[in-house]
Image (tube, rainbow, N blue to C red):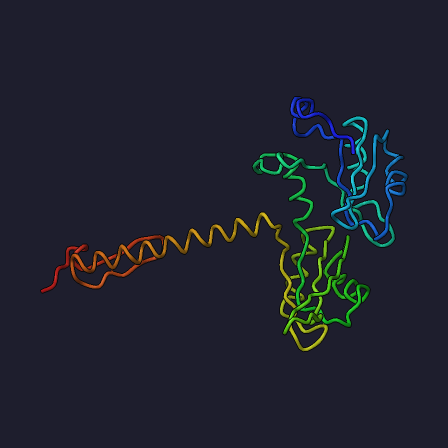
Length: 253
């Protein structure tokens, strides 16, 4: 793929993209098919499939105007078969480090805010059955099913499926959670339905939990120190506060 030079890209500003990332393409989709699909929206410099990710590819336009037009016309609007395509500006690695102030990163987060992660779908349930049932909550842009494999004594077997369900609107996703989370619509085992989280979000969540756990340990040690120094039985409160008889001025009588 032909990318703009680094200084040209940075000088044009983060929002002046010419490269698009296209996801949710059918298995076996070719670069030539991708180019034909996006040719109506402007002059294409190159089109390639992503070798590292099945069903994904890149389209590079000659100008930002053409790329923006293609994005507007295709994202969640253009379908191949029964699947809506996810189209977004291609974020370079160094741009991914940028904060939420990055307009491209904001666009991608907004795009997937109605995406759900579904766990414990029985193996026998088909994509069509899931689409029919979950469609009661709202219009679905895309559904993907994936086998969940578990290893026991070195042997792998599929015990259930996991699913990714993208709704056209956030209201549909919210309704789906209300209707189907902990429901037994497909069998005796309740489904787990919640908003999908990216790896970055999960990493941040884990970091926040680790920091909270460290703070709790520090507060506990601090309370024990105060107890040993002043007597009494200090109590630790959420947020780091603590209270002891001596510290409150009550003193033992």
